Length: 313
Length: 297
Picture 1: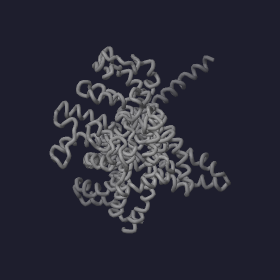
Picture 2: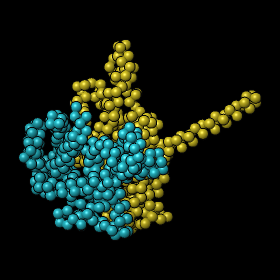
Picture 3: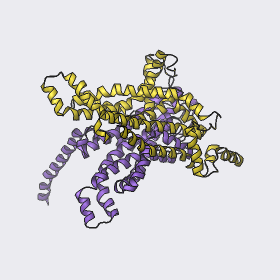
Picture 4: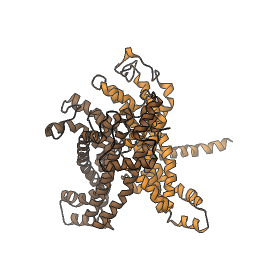
């Protein structure tokens, strides 16, 4: 097991490097010099000169990358070009809403997706299965941000069950946190739930054909026990492998949905950074999210290997 | 001549009837594909005819008519600048499909090439797949967002940005197909008679990857349209005057309570078009590879 973790971690290192290089290279794809893109259309040559100097853009690529990447290990992402705050400060101020929303979204998508997939796989090719599968296609066709607005119109404006916008930290008030986060979490969870439902269904179909399920049925076990005790465990395993992929999808939803519900998170920070051409902030958000996903992939693979020893070799 | 005509008629009628019956069978046998293609076809017609079926210039400002509810004059109402939303929505179809199609074209061609190389050449494989893994590690929309920040916002740059962030999907599909194909006897025999590598790759292997690629490309089409809308919505997509469904919704955000139609209507069109692409993808998968029914990679 330890050797597996070691090998798997080694595989992640080049990916982390690629992620860092890609993030850093963003500065270089601008036509001409990155300083032109940052300064905007009305910049004077002096402005550009100053930005070039400030960011050290006149140094060789590898030197720049080295000092940037080295800084990250010391928790130094540079300074925001717009507000002058350190990027680390900005990110630590904004990370909490994004993390809580993502976790809530992930839990909610499992809560919705797993039972739907189990039922669809159990009643495969029935009308119920068809309805669930159609809902699932619809689920990853609806844009999360638009769904957010529809939920606001329905549950905040119409029924007045939840507040339309705003964010309450989980550390301030737990009930208010759930009240303010239910609609955002639901709108980001739908696409994840749709994918989970599909994956669960197809692995249920496979598992239900196994010999041990036939044995369970033959000895007269309750269908409920067969479904939730015997099949779900095996069927949920493949779902566990895609948590990293799921997280990437969820974060895409979160980045956009934060704007809908005016949640002061990383997505909003990134979108504002684009408008202000605040490259260090943007790079940091991109890198943090990429890093989280690489780490999640690593963690899920390790957990999977622990659950299913066949994978270790 | 008459005898010939008399002879032809029943058989012609029969052929027609048989053809009708077989297409009816496709509709009932593969409803996903037929419904998907029907909606996509409709969206395509709207997109092509947009300049002819719009009622106003989609960019025309008419401040005195701002936030008009849907009615006879403005079928889908107007936004806060008094722009006619029916015309903007119709032109939005054009943009969405254009971006979807361009991304699919760019990603399919580059992904096919990269996937063929990665699947066939061991050394290039590890290089290409590490980059692919790296790109996959970013939430697609966020990577596109960062690229647009540097490239500047324009339709062309949005296409480039989404293509880069979506490139891994096709590359991975092609690579894994190539890996299984290269062990097959027909490839082995091509190699045995001394066919050069490029010939094996492009004449023998590439055509066999097109099935899975087509399926993946359909889903990619859906993802590209969704990403464009998301980017434009948060203000980092196509320039804000361009009639795009994401842009329309973005304007409507501030008028959700007084003028909900601005947000609701383009979203319905977006969802339907994306749904149609996904249904088509499902239908194609059922048709081309029935074993995979109900799964999704």
